[in-house]
Length: 563
Image (cartoon, rainbow, N blue to C red):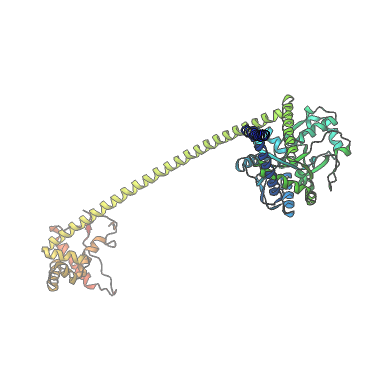
């Protein structure tokens, strides 16, 4: 019994010890770390599976931003991408947006500022854009891009204007040896693929590259336009950018800066011409906005990879004379960093050994602007002086005209006043003489009023209405007037004063018919017999006068003289 008890006790003791050991294990933090690691591995695996599943699904929409005009290398790459992405079902809808200007810097700035963290947009840029950003101190905009993949490359071509005497590259090298400073080069930004090509040709001709006069433009269209206009002797840029000028006969291609010839283009390469050296290709790539999520970045990388692996990709690039040059996101990011470093060194090297002509060009341009500004200022002063003199002449002419007008107005005012005074004097004189004649006849006040109204031409009925009397009274007053005046009727009364006013020229040629002031002078007492005789003549003439025109009564002898 004792042994059995010991065995049971030992088993109980061992169970208690194992329980205590497990409790001690769970109290230690080691198991927590192991569990957390397992959970993280499980989460990463699920995220990768989700990313792969999302990457295999087609994108609904994708916007390709080409920071150039339609027709360039960036636009051609975007057009080929749109064609393949939609045809292969990788993206359902692709839209191309053009934002040209300053070698792609305007489009770069717009893309960075307006599409941050946008996983449905790609910027199609290249070496020229990187060179322009370094040259214009806009490197910060490049830091806001996420490189996705290098897509294509374009071979540079050395061209001259159609009127150039250089028919081939040997003629150009001979001209460089004879007078290198007389050749004016034009191309892309310093540090790009164009500037090193010029240095390579200078070494091939045995000429110091520092003697070359090179002027850069941020846009390839500007390079082609300036070169076709005859401003420069030689130009270097991508074939895709200069193709339409070469086909139009405005430019002549001398050599392709590539080991392999361009398909369908009859221009020899550097390798065929025996020029050995490193050729820098003009590459084009796709960039996503900054702060794009890992999931969106993976979807974009997968879509680009499916596109370049499609058999449609190379066929889509052939019409644009572009070559497929795919690099993944990691390799493309390293390439962009190396290009920025190389271009910065090229800028510093160019600053150490400056071109005298390139230094003088800004001074000449500024001097030209100053001269143009001075000429414009002088022309403005001359125009102002001429305008002031013309204004003074017009002012003097207007002053003279105003003086003459005022004199005429004053003269006519005096004449009108004089006529008004003369007319008033005539009216006063005639009224006075008529009143004297009425007084001589011995007319009453009522008869004088009736006589005045009859002289004004009123009928007896109207006179009666005006005086508020009867017609009979007015006729009696009129008969009294005729009787006292010794006249036969109303006609003799009017003729008595009218003929005195008009005068009798046939009786007295000296009489002035145009006298302004006339009056009836009463006859002197000593000449009473002559006045009676004159009145008799008037009565006789009045009896002889008829309005039917049988005879014309002679005017009265009695004259009206001026007062």
